[in-house]
Image (tube, rainbow, N blue to C red):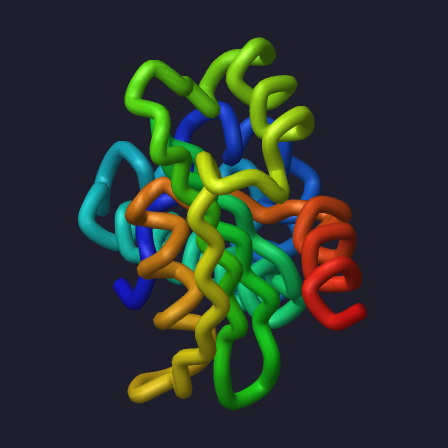
Length: 157
């Protein structure tokens, strides 16, 4: 397995897609039920293959990621060969970017000496999708890129 198995909730959401996936392998509901009971290892493999297919599609379309922690915000824009990053760090230890108050504080103090901002670029050393998946495993999530675009436009002007 290249990525991670989808959760039960994710499988539930993708029930129709999973049914179609099984159909492409000429596996109907009765046969799937039989496989789960009589060949659980085969059923596990099918779940893993489907999970990887879904992840591959999601990661291929990934353009922006965000990761928030108490004192840091990591913003990423993913390109074909590299990722561009903007890292915001609060120099005020009481700040908590995981709260609404912390985000409001950021808005009020964005361009003061209490915020450290770093911009970077990292070339993918391994497969693009694997690199993006690694960021997700570390706590990043897909985003619409609105925050990245706002800050980047200010930096570039």
